[in-house]
Image (cartoon, rainbow, N blue to C red; front, top):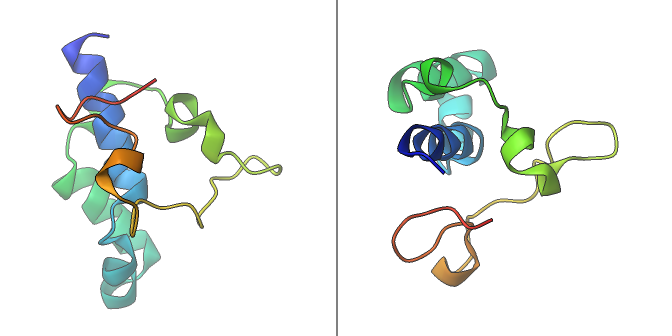
Length: 91
C-alpha cells in the first residue's frame, strides 16, 4: 500500500469514526460537524483519493448500504482497533 493510499485510508476512518464527532454534532449540528471533520481536522481526504469509508471498511456496511453507526473504537482496547502498534491499518 502506498503512503498516499494509507494516509487516505486513515483520514477516511477518522472523518467517519472520530470519537469527537458526537460532541461536535451536539455543539454545531450534524452538517457543520461533518464539514469540520472533513475540511479542517482531517483535511486532504477529498484530494488524496476517491475511495469511500465502506470501500476501505466493508465490515461496517448495514443491509441498507449505510454505515453502521453503533460500531466504534470508543471503549475498545488498542489491540482491537483496526491498526497495529506502528499505526498501520490491518487488512
